[in-house]
Image (tube, rainbow, N blue to C red; front, side, top):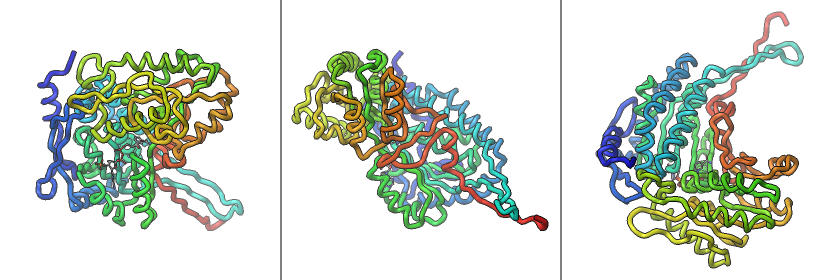
Length: 492
Ligand code: NAP
């Protein structure tokens, strides 16, 4: 059943629209606001506070003030707050999903999947909070005892993108709370509502005031740079584009800030001659179309063995062409709009460039008219190596297929990118699978599966896709420092 305007209004009216500082809402300097739009219609959804640099400092003040007491809270209590947060997210999945669809555009079913995925980070890290431990050893010469212990790194800045408005936040907030760090979160200006709703929810879950502060702003660079350079900030964790990531690493170098970077991707999706083609097409649909292709892990280049390239491409084109495009709140819609006009124009020009370079268009290709930023699911075949589509992150529902003849050629093509986030490979041969997982230069590999994201696994990239890991046993380490204490007994 489609969502009614009254449902939309109720969900929007329930969201805090001020800055979330010190456990409650507060206006921005000069009561300035920024407008949040529905990408499916271009209509106005809400006005939220538009923070100034001084507001940013207020948020950091709140986080710094709470750091010591929060670090001293028993790990079990921190874990139980996360567990209650997980349960509240699960109970409110319908409203959180609707809010996300309204501000970001993805279909309701995908928003529900993201709320579940996002909540799982809270559950996972609620379990990790009580497993932070150290070591005890005797030095090789026997003279000293070596005690190794873990401490929370301290007040952390978190900057998140618009494509997964909740999950990119919870996979930072979850481990930070588990480790005992306070934080200032800055969501993207296009999708601030989900994070503001989440801040209110975590307060209900019992998170002490000032631990989680959220600032929304139309001037992210001006607001965040002073905070990155502030000596009280102890860590910066960023998810977003490689260009902005580079800038933030430069800023953070001045004080040698601890940094985690989850950046862009250009994932290759390999289909070997022996692959189960049904499974490969299913996997391709997931790897390409999750989040309308607006995912850092999205399959960006389909590299298919020449013996199955025609069959794979036509099956993929049939599946892509059958998808229902529309506003994410409407019944049966499988593909929502892109985030904004700029995103739609970028995708349009990447497709046009590939066609001009000689690629064959199998389905889609033309942006839709009318309100909203829609682009149809598109498949291109024989995309030449020089086309921009092979080098750049398309961030849209476009699947370029290229064929290869040998495994070495496939590996060379897969690695021919500055990025190294995710890769997918479909083969029934174990030796081929092992060879690929060892030779493709990425942080995550999906073998015979079109999704790699899992809260229990370390998510992250290499090369220009960044460094640091989110989720898994590794996720909490990003928020901990190792301290060692040497103890010399009076009698050896
Ligand atoms: P973006 O332009 O880099 O923005 C990401 C965040 O950084 C937003 O909150 C943005 O705020 C903020 N920002 C922009 N300029 C800034 C500056 N000078 N100083 C401080 N903050 C700044 O990226 P996006 O277009 O939103 O997101 C898409 C990108 O994220 C893609 O490249 C995608 O691959 C990547 N991504 C990576 C992962 C991963 O885990 N590796 C996951 C998801 C997305 P405003 O937008 O409000 O200015």
